[in-house]
Figure 1 (cartoon, rainbow, N blue to C red):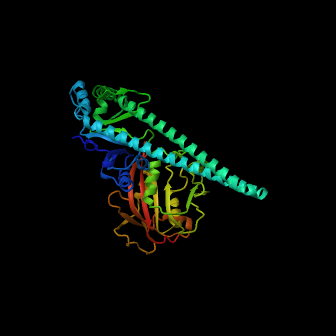
Figure 2 (spheres, rainbow, N blue to C red):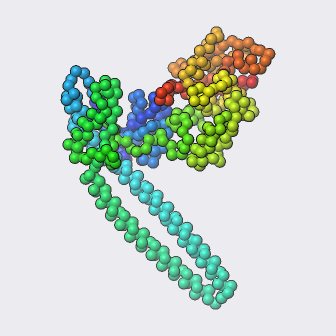
Figure 3 (cartoon, one colour):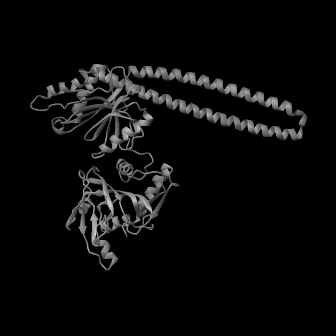
Length: 479
């Protein structure tokens, strides 16, 4: 069944149908974001993609932080059935994506052009406002300078003061008239040029097809074969010209065993590419998802790492983002934070996975130090490797069910090892014995004595999976 991006003749003002690609596991974050940031409706998802309807312009769409790429939807329908049918028949089925419903293609192209034209008008208005502001500032500077000159002349020749003032005023008015006439002429000439260019573009649309095939479709056909079939159908039906190097329009097609999706990339550069990131680190979409879980308000930011290279890279990114005065960086060990107990509102941490950076110390000691500096009611959001997550959940000691947020106990020797469950959010308690040595006590006690699990999401980091876990501190840890 085909789902068109809108009724024939509709435009961005009536709400256009879009979809974003997202890393596996980030779909819930993206669904919440499009609703909150874009006032999106008809929000739905399939693995790796979120579909929604919005009236937002390009500037608002560009602000999405949890998406990889953004597309204007042309078609979404059931998958192609690949069996013993000949390749020729399947190729005909692919061409029906265009031939059966050309109206959805034309409608999407119209919306795409409207979005670009609206964005161009806004940029032009913004540039004109900037130019007018600069011109006013320049005129004011000229007037101020000439007034100062007048005052100086008044002291020397008081009798010539009135005449000089009139001459200056006339010169200023003449200069302003000349500037305005010149700008009006240039603006009119530019408008004529843009209109002529737009007309030529509509009659000479160039395109390129990008394909992704997976499942049985990917085993039967290559992306190049599918792209060629779709490209030929577009040229025959609409008269467009193929251009693999610098097309004005790109068509994206994803075929698998669950669905067939066709769309137009809205931006050439992926949304996940942050211009201010000079030194690559954690994937930007993962970092944003963690920050969104933390519910950050107006705060004082402190970043900490023991590595010189990590701090230097962070500093480069802060300078590029213009935030070097808003975030303080500390070179400290995570197990010896120079902060008072219960002095921090929120902690967000990408716990080292032990591949690029060795963990060195037991993860329990790291988490216990975080627990110490976090105040009651504060939040911790962690990115844990599968191994770390398993180590925290596989408590070998006997456990007692934890069913409510008020069920903690103050009896000696009882501490909670909270286990973030993806479905139940349950936790367990384990029994430990107090040692005379504080070091042995920290090693033996369970890592999350006062923290209550709130959320846990399994996400993909590409070659490996990880868990984003959120905790709230329910009571003083006593560390």
